[in-house]
Amino acid sequence: MAYLETRLKTIMKFFLAVLLLCSFQGFAQSKITVQVSNFKNNKGICRACIFNSEASFNDSKALQCVEVTVANKAAQAFFDNVTEGTYAIFVIHDANGNNKMDKNFLGIPSEGYGASKNNLPFAAAPTFEGNKFTVTKGFNYTFKIRLRNL
Image (cartoon, rainbow, N blue to C red):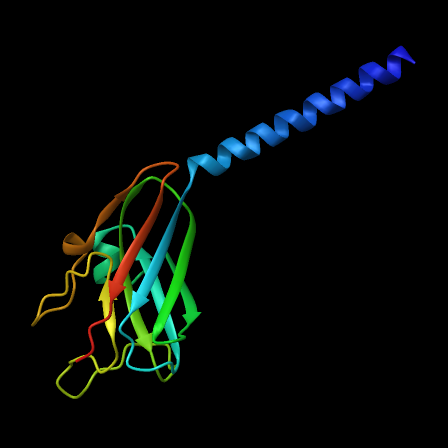
């Protein structure tokens, strides 16, 4: 009987250690919520992409992209398990679902777009520098992005 009790205590300690390890791991990561507004309509999808450097932002090589539906001319996207670092978010309304940001013959976007700090220069594309933010371990962040529709 003593052997069984000892064995049971060892198993309980193991599961407690695993539980504690998992809970600490969860606190080490951060979550980012992106609330997007000012869609022209509810067609297509909203694509939100997170970038971790100016080079990746300029080359459209996102760390991660998520696609969410548009409802009531708004959308909400989530990035889970984000590690500490510097990031920028870029969002487009892919109204026709062709997986790219459409532009007219002059190169002007014909679909809505936005960025993490809503820093959208009038006659130029948004930049990483103008929209970057820093993520600290264990914190959750919310960004309210208003699309620009030209």
